[in-house]
Length: 249
Image 1 (cartoon, rainbow, N blue to C red):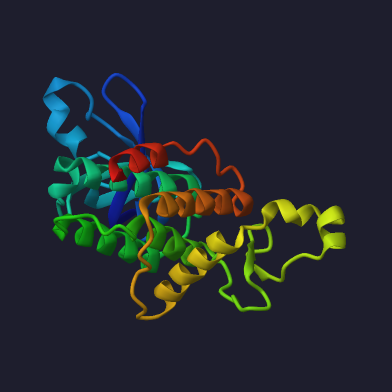
Image 2 (image 1 turned 90 degrees about the horizontal axis):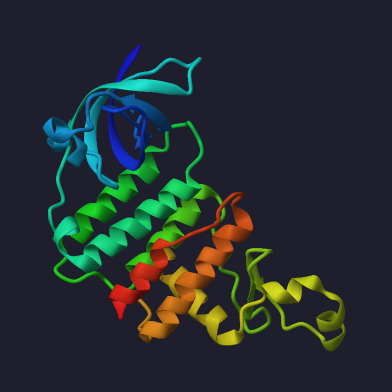
């Protein structure tokens, strides 16, 4: 059976002298792997350029439910985002988003709302002369919503500390609790917890983006990566945030 779908390229691996295996996030079928023939070699450079991280394609794919590896019959650019490959900062954000998606998306089920959000984010990033400083943090929180692991924003004076393991804000631990509770290691400090609360407020309302110094934004990105690691199996060996931090400086 042939299916027409839009797709975002997540990862490619050489398969033969002229072919690759592409891990692709499709609007209609979710995350799938496809063999793409004839894209390696000098004469095929133009086709290989269509398969860069987060390339946005219109594709016709074979969909055999009994196979985990099918073929892409046709592919063409659905829309190009030229500034994402020219600006080092834009490119670093794209690689960060791509690695997040590659290491979190596992379901071979359609998720058109998430697909649409990613395309909307890429289009907005392409149109922006400067990358919004809050974008990496906001994208991670939006992604957590779609993955069903969103932090609960129950912040209050009584519950001011975020527990990474429980995914919610909790009271200050008592001295007895600090000596006996293994969850203490998962608690953010008051400042980190407050910053996370501010961003959760922004994501869920029309509140303005929190204005934080660079280092505090970097710290919050690292915290959210730890949060993903605590709630998603096999989420490890994440690398692109280091490049992102470097260009944000």
